[in-house]
Length: 163
Image 1 (cartoon, rainbow, N blue to C red):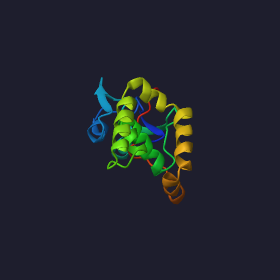
Image 2 (cartoon, rainbow, N blue to C red):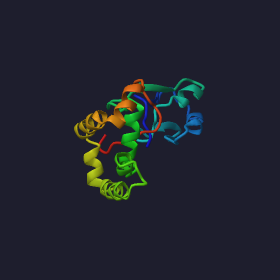
Image 3 (tube, rainbow, N blue to C red):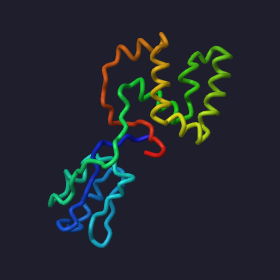
């Protein structure tokens, strides 16, 4: 549940001395030393820039990611996507846990959304966009969406299969 930045670490092979400082400082162990040169695992790299800050010879660089990085537009969207990712969408929709009906329906939805094909389907951009439109029209969610400023959150959010 990590949302990387739109940047990714890069290493200038001709400049890198293989000192290992970048690998030591990387908070997610995305950099290793191979043949006395730093190597970035792009699947793990968050694009935080810690490696570039500590590289003593500026061999680490930050480059723009080739793929577009998804960032939720507001806290409401982030929480809804986290609910899908964690298999708790039912709790998000049926939030009155005192009600037996809500509790029962939330358990059914939660079990259903934990299925990998269902989760992949819900993370498709067209699907979750329509879902947010539907949620935002409901009175209980409308207040939340309207009162929150749009924010670019670079902290946790769901990973989207296939992206």
